[in-house]
Length: 282
Image (cartoon, rainbow, N blue to C red):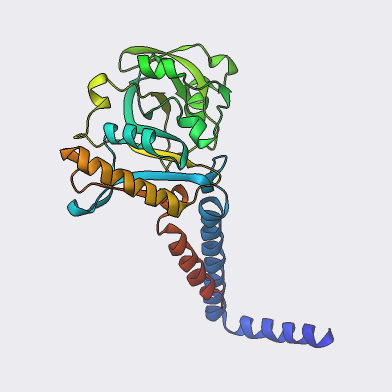
């Protein structure tokens, strides 16, 4: 112990004799610690923590494989979504969503908000119950009912977290909707934060549409199904559709775990950054 304190006093004397070196060393140490802290916080929130779904390991994104046109993961057409959902035997359920936007003009100044149109089973496929209220019924989805779920952020921002928000009207793009629910605070789908959700409500002509590709499709694997089996079956269905519909010529299907879809190459890049920042401390 005496030797330790002797070495410490000697080191402090050297630092006092070289103030320039001391400042550089302390700055490098501070930068290294700060960088590691920031990167670890990102790793913790993006990689280490589970995605905000009930069973994320069973959730898959299903895309059209249009590799012939350099789009190996293409947004599906509605008719393909309906055929996939009807013909597959590996998924417990399959839901669809698309982006949306609106001008909010009630309970405050006008504000542009971004949301999603979703099928009625969207939240049940993800295993995400609302924080308040309820989600959509099949009838509301079919009829295009003027009902909406709002995000936790919008609830806090425009309604101050008032639990009496359910049943209140909200005006978007000049149309009146009724608030039926609030999504959980940490709910994010595919890294896209949304302010509101409304029923998808496919028009009749869209149900058979194979020429417009604008959906994101998420599916829940059956407990006894595997990713390999899902890919095999979806490829088989894609081949059937190629034979049946001219619009599907050369069009395949791609199944991707949602965690891989969300993180992409981010996970590996963050670990590399963590290692690089750690080297500063050496």
